[in-house]
Structure formats: C-alpha cells, structure tokens
Length: 580
Image 1 (tube, rainbow, N blue to C red):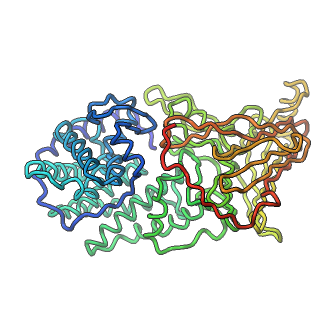
Image 2: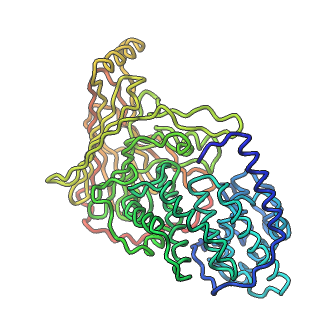
Image 3: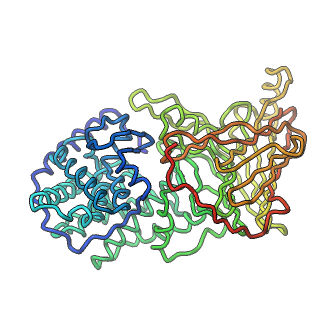
C-alpha cells in the first residue's frame, strides 16, 4: 500500500467527498444491457449466521438480531469497510431464500436512504468498485418484488457510483484498491445501458496498471498470494465483461492473466488452498478454483519458483517455501519476517503451517503474526529476521525494514526426489550468522528431510559473532527451530521424547524426528484464521539449542508412519463454519 503524506490524504478525502455528492445529481440508468449473473461465491453458513443476527465482519462479532446493519456502531474502520463493500451480499445470496432476499433488500435500500446522496465512509474508489460489482452480480436477486420507486432508486445509485468511479478511480491506492476501482467501472460500464463510454478510459488504465503492478513472473510487489488471487479474479471479470460486449481486452490485460495463472497454481497447496504468507490467507472458499477454471492455462512454473516462493510437490504432498527477501517500502505494509519459512500439506490436510495474519484480531495480534517466531523457520536469540518500524504517528502503520537482502536459492531433482537449498543474511548484521536451509521431499511424497545451519562465513561475520559471544560470556547464542501445526493435527511427544507423533483427520500419521543433539518440546501456538472470531489454539514443535561456533547444524525429518496407507480415502467432513 502506498504511503501518502497527511496533506495528500486530506486532499484525496475532500475530492472524494466532493465527487460523491456531485454523483447524486446523475440520472438513473435505464436498465441492464443483459441479465446479470452472479460472479462471486458466498458462504451458505455465513449467510445463515447473518440471518440469525450474528454479524461477523473484519474479524469482529456483533450479535444484533433484527437490527439494521447500518445502525450498528462500527468497532473499527475495517468493520465499516467490510459492510460498505457489500461482500456480505454474496453470503445472503448463497442462502437465496425469501428471508435472505428480504434481509439483503432491507440492508441495501437502507444504505441508499442513508448514504445515497454521497455521504458516509463507503465513498472511496475501491469500496465503490467492490460494492458496484456486488450490486450488478446480484441485481436479479435484489430487485425481485421491488416497486417502481425502489427500482428507480437502485438504478440511480448504480449510475451515480459509475459516474463517481469515472472521476475518482485514479485516487485509489496503486495495487489491489486500484484494480477494484477500475474493474468496478469496466463492469458497470458494460452492464448498464448507455454507460459504455465511461468504461473506455478505464480499459486503458487497467492495462497500464497490469504493466506497472504485475511483474514478468506474474507476481505483485507485496508478495501476498491471496491479494494476487483477488487481482487475478478482478482481471478475469473485467476480461469477461469485455468479451460479452464483443470487445477484445488489451494485450497487457491478457498477458497479465497469462502470467498470474501459473503463479497461482505454483502457490496452491495440494488441498486447493493458497500458501499463507505476507498477510495472505488461504483465499475464500472456491474462489481459487473458480478463477483458475476461467483460464485455459494449466501449467505451473517449471522451476518451482514463483513470486519469490519455492514449491516442492510429489504425489499429494506439497511444500511451499518463502524463498526471497521480504517486500520493501510501501509494499511491506503487511509483510512478514518469514524468509525460509515453509508450509506442508498432505492431501486435503495442512500439517505444518505459519500462524498467519493477525490483522483481523487487532494490532497486537497483527504485530505478533508478522514476527519470525510465528513462522515455521529458525528464530535466532528471540530476534526476527527483519524488523518492524515504530507505528507511524498518524496512520499507526508499521513497515518492515532491515530484512534479508541476499537469499540465494537452488532447486534440484535428485535420485530420491526434490531438493531445495536456500539461505538468508537477516542475522548477519546482528550476530554475524547466515541461516541456510535444505529441504528434501521424497519422490513418493511420504517424507521431508531437513537441515538448518547457522554459519559465520567471512572474517567480518566471525568477528561480529565473537563479539556477541563475548557479550554472553561464551554461553552461546540461543536459537529455536519452530514447526507450527494446524489446529486439526493431534500431536504428542513419542519415543521417550525423541519424536513427535502427529495424527491427521484423514487417518494419516506423521512422525517428526531430529538428530538427538537438541532439546525437543511441544509448545502452545495459535492459528490466525480469517473469518474466525478469535485465534485458534494449536501446538508447535520446537527444537532449541545454542550456537557455540562458526558452524551449527540441526538435522530433522518429517515422515509418514510406515503403517500409513499409500492412498488414504479422506472422507472426513470439515466444519463449514465455526464461530469460536
């Protein structure tokens, strides 16, 4: 997210407000070019919760049966953004019955009555684009049974928001917010009669943003996999709207889709969810499948590297590793100190995970989730491999600084499977040490062997290491090697403390072992999951030791138990919704 000085932010808010109020003067659209069809997938379970009065938005739970959504006092700006973006409309449409339609209609025309003259916090380009797409997608669901006056109010606000976007899309922050604004304008321009001319400049602008924001490997500066999925989805929607209007999207637009699709496939675990790195989650249920199904490309990156991530996969086991320096500058707003951390999924079951983004649970959880100890990687002496700046005085935002700059990576095929080798210099300045990690996934996907090393390579690094050792009176530099487990994993210490046994809901048993030279513990951890009301309790495997010399080696392995079947029929049903 781009940084803006206070004067620029103030000017943007004033101009947005002025344009929003002017938009109220626009005449109502006369109708749709063709009958709209839903493009977004909601959750039936979340829809039922909304009907019961359990409002869950941006990680906040508000129990308000029978209350108007707009009467609820927002706990924070994120809650306000979520309700003004109308993502909840997808969930009510997923229920789709008479009661759900009535609730959706009440809340929509309640918004029109309160904010239809251009007032309120929802009049920003990104939220307007997001809201407009939902209104169009679910127009048939919303308009059924409405009288002429209500229909005219709906079409007037559609026209007003389209006009507003035509004038203010460029005020959206570059990245996902601008993609949302431009896609909303294109989608509305080709959906509403007489608005096509408003979409033409947005088509050119969207192509330009594709060239500016999406690199040659199909990645974003933020390196957030879930954000990349959202951008990809928006681009496919915009391309679909152009195709239905018998218009060909610009080459830059189509090229961006072709670049992103293999990257998303590379970042996809064997269970269909995205790797959870740099503020991103697994992605909304079904969104990734739907987005990729619209693209004819079926390949992944041949070298296993995409947007700074490395992938090892065999049979139904996938390992995804953060194999690049963290995002810098403005793009580091949601970045994590996760270099060389990995996740492992077996079939439909995540086993090794990162804690995830805690932004839905408040500032403290957000900060904790970004630290190295919240990832499945080595943490040195309580330090993270990158540091957070103090919160900005006006915005409270924290950027990531002093992270690794050199992250050499190699992936090889071996006789026994695939091997990843990587390293980073995030601890060189503070301790004189380089962290190197080797991961080897067996050809049958039943085992992952790992080796982590702490190395003082050059004379300046050795002098730095010696200085730190002197400060601790030669007691050594403490380290913890962490493996966070998914909450559904049932783990316990086994073999007299020499191993950890892990049972998955599929019936698979995995065994963690190490070289026996270090302390092995099973400690509490948390799983920070979008859509939950609070962090989920889980466990983590921790290997602890002290670096006493210029080279420290820790060997470990993860393997399926010998009596675990080669092919497991995983028929256990997951909870569709949980409010704990």
